[in-house]
Image (cartoon, rainbow, N blue to C red; front, side, top):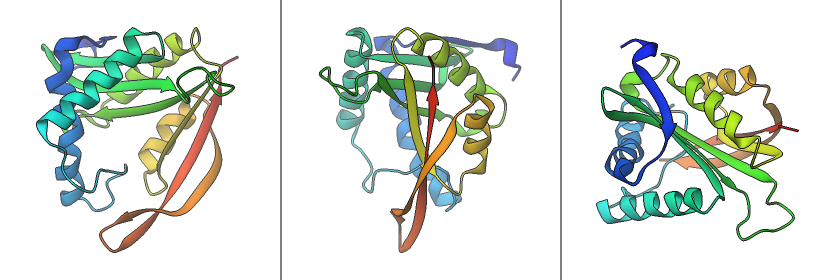
Amino acid sequence: MYLNSIKIRDAKPSDSKFVSYLISSDRKDSEKNPNFGDYLFIKRLSGSQLSERFRSRYKDYSSGNAVFKVAECEGKVIGYCFVRKKDIPDSELSHVGVLSIRVGSKFRRKGVGTMLVRDSLKECKSHFEIIELNFLAINSIARRLYRKFGFKKWGIGPDFVKRGGRYIDMEYMYLQLK
């Protein structure tokens, strides 16, 4: 896979099955690696729940309350970055966007996340003033990615994630766009 064969574009309704697959495949990743760097749903989501999750995100995007980018390689979505208003409908927090990202396991550590975040942040400048995110504090790869773009740590949620019988800290970061 070459980076020049990857295209970053706005999400489309037809991306639902690919985005849903990315969300559902994370459970397999955490089973292989208990230090998988993101938090998950405790129960596997059904196909209809995954479809509804995509529809909800796409609705936020199409109504102007979110930025929704996908990475595509050879006609398949291999990752996405979604940044939504922190509080909808409009409030005193609506200038803050909350970023979430997923990259398929075969495409991690190859620059796809960097491409998604870069293109998403460019578009975020016309929607938000601050971007915030969170991830498992054990995820040094995510930390490096976000620091590359200037994100700064603003806190730790001690034991915020309970995976099996193990507690894991959550790290919080922000980026001022203005």
